Image (cartoon, rainbow, N blue to C red; front, top):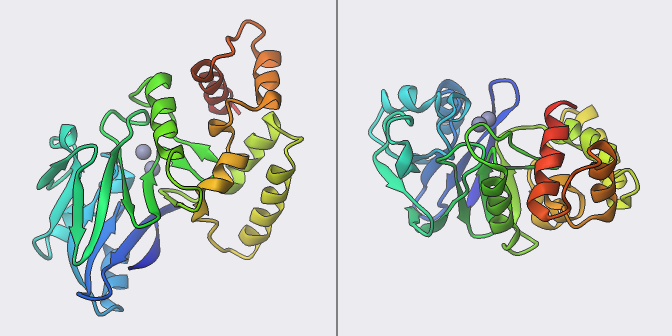
Length: 255
Ligand SMILES: [Zn+2]
Ligand SMILES: [Zn+2]
């Protein structure tokens, strides 16, 4: 399969997934229609589906414009039928999706919103605003328990899984990460690497799940340094994984 990253709005990414054998394609999270249509016009592909990770406008804003041109399947979590424009296929944990001859699997990962899903095609994970490169989404609708459970579910995938998230936030996420785990050498090295890419205007997405496990503070509730940072900011904080995760998320909210 081929993956084409399409920058949208200010810092969103849409992803065009192409089955190279049949030339059928799907677009993950079209924030807007025009740039997607322009990119598709340059490729010998037929768009057949929209895959929405969640209902937020910056991930679904292009549904209407794309559907005005052609009939498409529109996938999203089954609980979000009323919130995802044009949804044809309500999906849930474990469901399979087919684009041409490539098959994908659905993960239900609530927390950022109550109807958030991720799509896994081969070792490519499209996780919207749940797991970010070096960060995670805000808890707009879900609880810390839900979000931590969703992140844990994604962490169970193989280390070489590629993380394709919904936004280019890596550099600012890493600034926060360094504020809670400054002595992590992999984190320091990643920040340097990412700064180099951003200076040249290049994308820092995808990362790998291995890199996230080593440097993403929202997956590192077992890190002694992060636990100590949480304790020094909130002396009464509990030390279990959900409480550490919740405290780090709160610290990021006001960073
Ligand atoms: Zn969102
Ligand atoms: Zn978003």
